[in-house]
Image 1: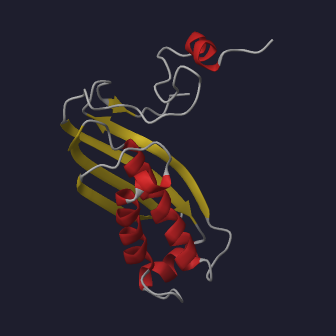
Image 2: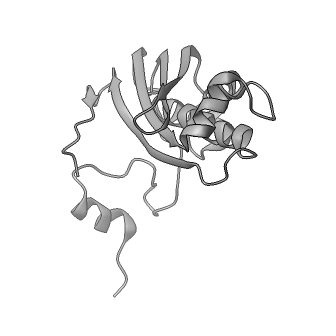
Length: 175
């Protein structure tokens, strides 16, 4: 028995899949009827590493140079390119992109936080997640000569505000 992807998906999900047309083909969502509102998203992630690697990065002793500055800039640039990287994402006028890489000796490693803000018809969750992902990958690339066993972990949406679906805040007990 073959299931109709549009109708069978609606049986399992609380909302219809807006990225599928009536034939089940991927489509870009029409947001032209939505009003522009201020939308903000925060995403987080982390890069776990040896204490020695973390110390070398903090001291500016990585072979490729300024690891943290390069990773921060890469995250900002990636947020601005999200619609070219992720199929069906809308190109958005971003008013704010902030990427932070914060040392965390308890990991050990770095916590990464990206905040993205716009006034548009659709949200910026993908831009924030892309910023964190690319910042983490860049940190890895810049420091891999020091340690290849670094681990990129826990990339997730922390919060989002604005838009029709309302606000969202991550809770550790979500499954």
